[in-house]
View 1 (tube, rainbow, N blue to C red):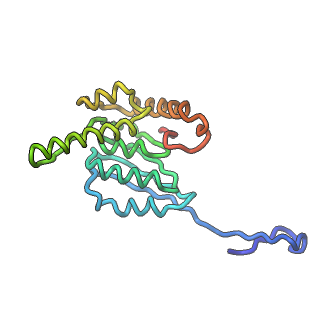
View 2: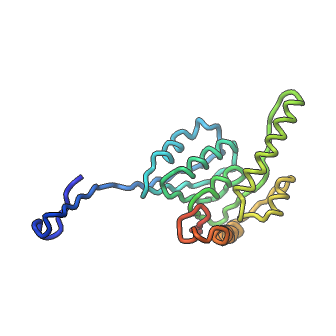
View 3: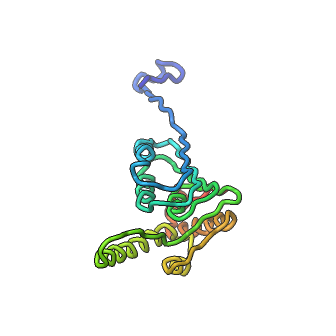
Length: 205
């Protein structure tokens, strides 16, 4: 903290102005391999938690997906972060990686990029009764996750088809077009937030 002087110190002795210097940070995070177990992402979670207002975090994604619950942990940390987060799709964001991409405050899409949207897969083993319960829970949760993540980006009909086994592969031009429609969708849904920074705003390349 230091006192600031504007012109003559004696011009207004009743007012003293103080300032605090602060340096904002720009961070680049790369996700170049498939999303693994949560313990591999502790540093990223910490960065998202400790970033301050004015900081920017760019997350560059080029991987084929992986652990959906790890992706959800990253997304939750992104939602709580004070930093502005830009996600860059360069050049592959498949499955769980597509969820992270769409969670950014703004987005960039590299030329010849692709995105795969599907319902994922489960590799559970155990007693048939346990498997049935787990599968029922998984089906319920994955529907909630996909409808939330792909809202405005995919149509309800497309999400229904994905939940019934469709694998939807999009190229860079299709992704950019859908990001624009997604922004329009959320601006219409939340008109009071149109001029504010929201997760559905895109800065597409």
